[in-house]
Image (cartoon, rainbow, N blue to C red; front, side, top):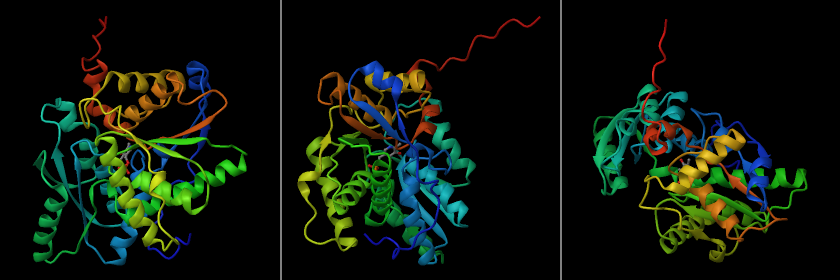
Length: 342
Ligand SMILES: *Cc1c(COP(=O)(O)O)cnc(C)c1O
């Protein structure tokens, strides 16, 4: 696949490491678990949006944009990385934060990603939950154009066929790493939300005839809806790249059993997964995406869906900045008692 014909900037510290989780593997007594460290992509505490932004910012610069405009939930990792990337390339950034959670803690509205959005100097607007947020940024973009600006609109999660190219690149990188170390990958597992990661991975793996299945663990939509949404973007990305034939729809597999009460709502299994990775591997997962994704992997190992002798790669898509918005979910909201100083 020829990716060099698309405008692109360099942001990612690539290749990201592919590591064996020896302690977790021993603890769960199932498949060998590997982790691809896309939490360490090198931009503003990292995460999967960095790879997408290489192509999105590339296109923004090619279109002589003055400002990027995007949207996400209050604790959006996508928004944080987008603002940082825009800054690096001399662009202004306006972001719309959707209040998908109405009853979050003060940390949720002020710390974590929100603090970083402010630090990077974003112009922030908020919206109540449930609006068509891509229509909201379109309206704001119209206003900016009337003022003589050239806004570049990035959809939620950076998930369109341009952003998905970043995960086509990741698929190429992963297969190269597997070949180098003679690692036979039985399944790739990751958290899926706005669909760009899974769509890009599937197109990239299929385009290389890799024969590596991908399981997306949904953090929001039910299985059928998420599979349909991933398939729609995968098809678009496939055509955008000029791949021959039809994108094979049957490769899209999503499990939505680990969402809990909804997007961004903590679950006990998420807390367990984040705590296990922290205490046994020294790795930070996040409360909204990778915590639920890894909780899915743990449960599927315990149920025997993944077995001893197999090799499973979890793609760590980042998000640890969000932990600071969720201290209360871990029972750590209270400060330590002060010791008596004499
Ligand atoms: C956005 C995000 C995801 C989901 O990726 P999509 O491409 O939106 O499906 C997973 N993990 C983290 C930490 C994210 O920020």
